[in-house]
Image 1: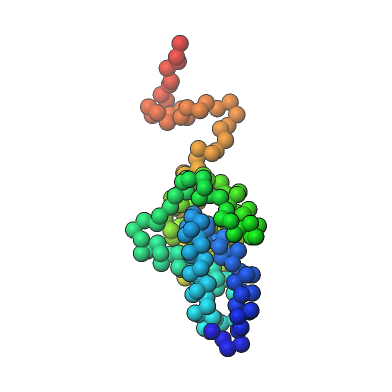
Image 2: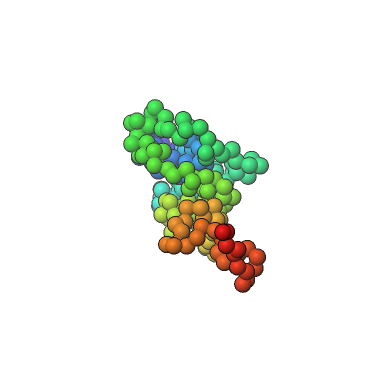
Length: 198
């Protein structure tokens, strides 16, 4: 760590950046406990690597560390432990969140369908779509954060969005007056007709 960085400076860094790192970690992991662990691990890594930080985009550096740690965890596990539709108690903010309104808001307003759909994505797709559509990073920033080519980012985001559309198809509003049954031709091939129930 830099000799000029004191304990108070370190506490300021953690206090200022912790909510954003936690929010990203939660979106990536889908779990309060895993997000807290990933946030802590991120700041441990930041503390150890601060001496090698090249002045620039500190937020981008934090995103890169957080996503790389998440992807490392995903590689180590055959399947990440997700419980997106688990006990309601796990979805409530922890007691310490009362002092951190942003975390309380995040937990209280997460849509379980969307969280479950994100959890179902392969980690590399989840990272891309979370960084783009939730965190608001540009494709170029995502490429730099994840360490892949711009075309790869575009491809992953496109694929992730397609998978999310499939996962969330049940949420699409039905067209006015359209039957809820499959569209004509969907069952029995083109030109087939439905028998009327009399």
